[in-house]
Image 1 (spheres, one colour):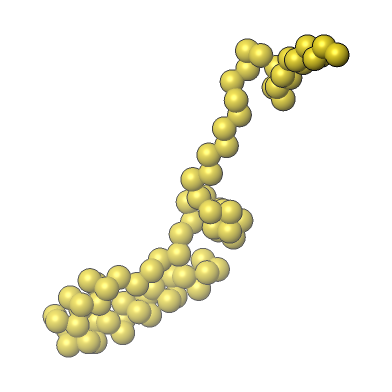
Image 2 (spheres, rainbow, N blue to C red):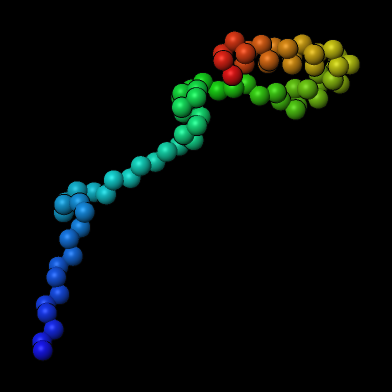
Length: 76
């Protein structure tokens, strides 16, 4: 018996079109919950450090209140 001729490979995309590349630059959960451009403000270690050094800790309370209020007002 003779071996059958090999069948040509058929690609999923027609010839001449470039392959489709999807590049997600943000996580799906971040995009779904906050959208692009809206970010939760996080408390900075260095801001707390310098406020502690310069205001004996009183500035830390006001900074923490500011960050918490800003995040709550924006729905985070």
